Length: 297
Ligand code: GDP
Image (cartoon, rainbow, N blue to C red):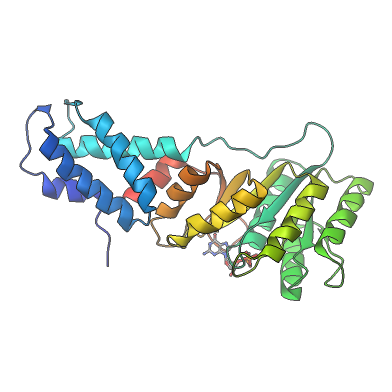
């Protein structure tokens, strides 16, 4: 089913409201119902929608309907601006260390695009930021994951450090840090193990690696195509690891991506990158205004 944009919804519902003047409480409630429906359809979390609607109501009531905007357009603008506000600023760069090796842990559930994102980010660092990154294969459970990272590393000319599946992830991380120091790398990206679901063993492994490497950034990959469950997954990772940035993957898909708004507002973690396809170049920084347009359809 094709989604109806918020703008279309409001235009349809309020084609009779014309002219200037303040919105009445009744007009406003009807409009807010459309806003609520639209956000829920975009998969924004219910609790997030509720808080959001309360804030919008406060802002919109009493606003004069002036100029070229009709009441529907005015509400769309207020809603859009509020979403942009919640999504945070565009400028959420990597926390590079002034001196010494910057270490980044990539975490996330299996299949969310963690390994792909690790390579995409390493590629940008090397080509555009003239850094010297080392990719580290810490997903020692799945041999295929190591091979995948090696293949990606080769394609972008970034070295991949791996001790194979016989060595524990923590020991691989320790050896990689030593290797990076000895070989003049200034950035280490650890591609950690994913699972299909969160489990204690995984979280413990990640916590141990975190405690040893003291990462400058912990980037969580979240798949924009995931529906409501994205909030639970992201909250669990954040509670246990204090994530510092999100990488929202698969934004080239047709989901409206309301989950991104939920995760951002529930965890407060900024989006640092977005994935826009399977190819290495399909990575961008985050544009909150574009995301807001997409959520509103
Ligand atoms: P991991 O298990 O989290 O490491 O996930 P992978 O990096 O192996 O990615 C899982 C699948 O998603 C692969 O087929 C990737 O090509 C694909 N993928 C990753 N990022 C994106 C993206 O931004 N867009 C699309 N369409 N596919 C992606």
